Image 1 (cartoon, one colour):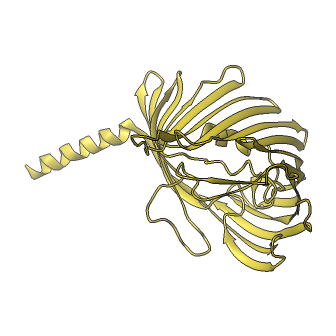
Image 2 (tube, rainbow, N blue to C red; image 1 turned 30 degrees about the horizontal axis):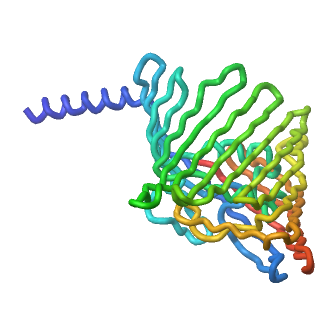
Length: 343
């Protein structure tokens, strides 16, 4: 009797495994050594930090073939710090969603990257890492990348054209105040050597709050070994706004080397953000009414060497300058050398 039960359980388990297309454990580990000068204080510090190119992470993802071209999908992803092993417990704060995909597109429910995030870093040099020129210069990268309590829909591809809409809600509604929300949309074209994308996102702490508005326009073109990239960003809050741009190139040398260089700039009345970034009260700092705009400039050169398909050594230099009318210029820089491993 026991033997029969064991055979039956094994058969059921085998059937369940057959129905489940795949479950994958994945992640990356990224560490870098840096010497950095703080533009505000002028102090230089040497640091060993996590996540120079990408945030160190691990996750699980999988899908089940439901037939007729439809699949059920899920993803759970958690970030952690390589320098001290720190992590917010076993919490999947980067992504945690379940959804369906097929000829109708891709639908996700839970915590997923917003439509704006899909486009934001797609045309920024140095892999949008700590060595990218926009770091320390741009403000439009301070958007909420993965809103909680979210819905995400990606359309099918139509001859290179596609789009995404996403929405996240704060669940903080009261009798007198509506709930906060993060709404996002993008459209893009990607075919052959050309890419172009436009994205827009609004963030409201509550239904009654003033919205923070983010805009991104990105484009790139692969011209032989050189990938030419241009990006425009804007962040607006009420009457205050800051406009930003970046230009650069990634150039593939012989062998496994890629050299990246670029320049980025921002200028406007929005000067920064403080407080929590998830619905409940991101505070926007601006210049005084009628005061001149603040200008930030960044420039960088970086090199990447692929030891294998999964392991990359990288290093480079980034400088940045902040010009505030009536005050001395603030200058900072970063020298970094790092190692990235995918698993």
